[in-house]
Image (tube, rainbow, N blue to C red; front, side, top):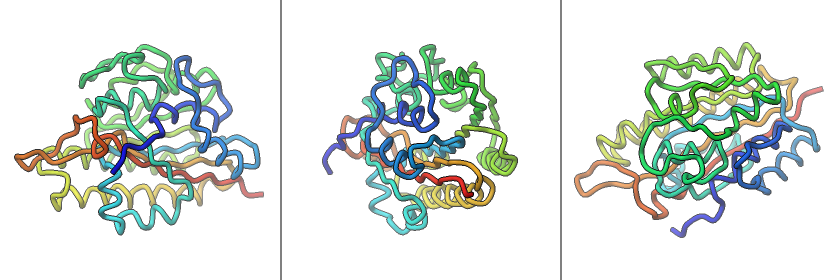
Length: 268
């Protein structure tokens, strides 16, 4: 497997573009393929609802090795975007780049450390534009720490089931312009038992089915909105000689990831 060419940093400004807001101050240019796709699907209009489901550590090689697990997801989404995550391929570094659009040396997390990012983020940009934003995550995980203190609503829980249940509730209430839901269940088990342990692979399938459930709810409850829905991970992973999982190498198995998106125009 060769290293993917599309940098993760190009996603942030593309998501800002989708909603018609100025990107964060240090964001790299928007991914041109994704913005063109959005323009085509929404006939030049902007999305007034965006839902992102972020998983953790499900590398592109895992998706491609177990294609049946993502079959329903791939049939629902029609824009597939292989990307190259940042180096080092660590969770806070990668999500920092995903939602600032900047390299780790710019956003300030260059090693594995869960610390507050102080530069401009997508969440700040959306809040400045008057967008209502919800971030859902597990307590004490990177996503709940590095983006804390923004003018958005946080829903932080001690169980993945509660995170997902809250996402369902928010979709059905249809009060937020931008919802980000984060699950790290695969990463948690993969580190302990290895990337291809049956319990790890079960979580891959669970995450893809969960996203399809969110998509089905959005199709039914956000019909009168221009919508962009997407899912993607922060980095990949590999097995250690001891049979456990990790992600630390400047190599395709740790850096190649894949995101999926679908834009729905509002029904008349």
